Image (cartoon, rainbow, N blue to C red; front, side, top):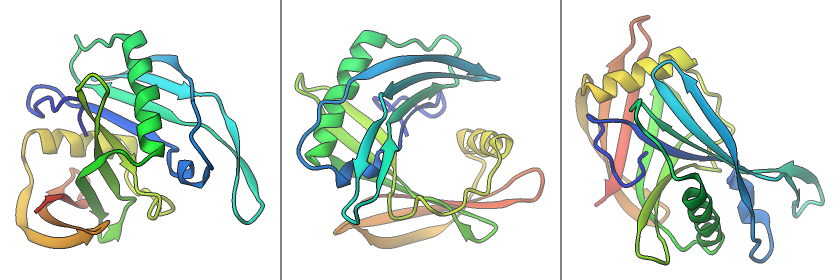
Length: 205
């Protein structure tokens, strides 16, 4: 999941929206204000975090929950920086486009850990008002209840293996996702502790 498609071999820049699934339950457009929640460094990673203030979401069954959105933008490039003010403006515009479903699904990633399916992620392309394109990774709300099996250390190792292109190609699979046909390239990775991970990356046919 990348912003402006930086090369995997140069630096992994990952923009991930967490907690966006509940947006589909809201009525009408809402102007959500983002704020910069700080920068964290964890080993080789640097992450800029942006959040919205929590709001009360009312579901059709009458239940309510507090819900906020967080966007984490992570890079392995030690010199990676962000224009925080511009990024806040971009995220607020993207949020409005998301509520209107003005976006294009360009990538689907499915992961199996020792045969167990993990939450699926989507890559959506957004075209901003000034013509710039942003790709955001977002969880599939239909699979977000699946248990995540990998620890942070295993996720780091898997990312390193993917950067090194150390996976074994095990075929191409065709699937329909949200009314479009995607071709999934399947790769098998074996972590140092023996955990087998299959990552299937689908792109529109």
